[in-house]
Length: 141
Image (tube, rainbow, N blue to C red; front, side, top):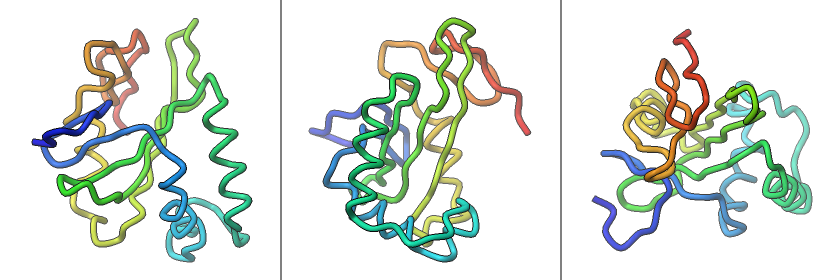
């Protein structure tokens, strides 16, 4: 499927890997896209300096894990994050952005969370049920 790639999360159509500094050009493009901003709530332009600060901050957060979503050809198409991880109470939130608009409406965000085994050989959250990270599954809707 994704031969020769080390990935954290891999599904049939997409894979997820940790966000890297090289991804910031794409995330900056998405942050400054007015159509995407409608959904994310970004209302002011973001500079590369601001994006680098955001990246450094999210890497340091213990209660957040952020991943890049790639297609089978390793094209970066979005990002997803497990947020507000509460290890004690086994709760978290899931955030997702498909930034490449040609993938909108194609089921990619569903595929990236439901098709993929999060953290190979470890437990993670499964939206809609389950308890694969020791976190309780979130009900649909």
